[in-house]
Length: 418
Ligand SMILES: [Zn+2]
Image (cartoon, rainbow, N blue to C red; front, side):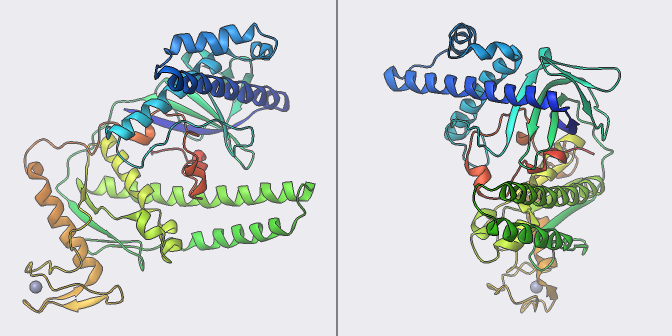
């Protein structure tokens, strides 16, 4: 399975200049290739093969006056850019045809110099790991890396990212064997809530991470300061940088907390069952703040990825299961309950229920029923390859940045692991 390992890197001033040049060239090649593909599609619905595309926008373009500067950067980064465009198209087609699950992926869009996040990728031929711990990038040089944890295997590619707060990251893709943990017989149902983060069918409660509110308060203060600065001024640029840093802080803190929670759950349980909450629907209501805080979809994604890696099972039960209305003791439906009602007594058997705990128990029961091989049979991992851990070029869907959720702002925390 493919996993990403991200590290902060510290390029020198001249390396930053070289990187800026490469970001620019990779972007131009990407945009040129996209324009050619769009034009070919419009003309006769044809698709230009990748080889021909690379020849047109790299090899041949270099010989022209207008694109001669492409010669000053690594060819590998430029070729990766075209492969990323291919991936973006493939993701779009897979999403349209239903082969790819999750949110709809749009058509690839042109990249801009003004994009919040700049990135470029090197294949195996474009980088080397030095014995002195530095990362050698083609035509850039040896860059200092902060190795916050060891790479478990030889990486197959590296993506260099410049985030909006001005930090550089190297994100390696490594192919590793799943390491299945010893099988347990504990299974748990989880009810994701609003008053608490989650309640588990064994009665354990995960509290909401309130520390996020504090980080967000600082973020709001920085945003207010930004709005007071004159447009185009130096101070405004400085304030914008500050807001970006505060954003990154919130995202990193949240990611860190989610990693801890999900790792613990995966270690302690053989199977975990969740409700398929319509997170997007909820996020539009006034509950939006809490839902964002809670980061439910990230919680679920991390669980699924870690389950695949460690041989656990994550089961998602249907959204319309009336988990809060049915008595988990006798199974009799007790009718809908407004959100305000936290405890209720079953009219049929007289059991007194905590709303969330009852829901968690029902989720566990529904999950078990959905999984006939639960006892004895081979346990299938949640998914074969975590979708988000695949080496996919982002920046192909504008919406990602608009939701303000910054799925990759936490690039630092990286995708899964530990
Ligand atoms: Zn009952």
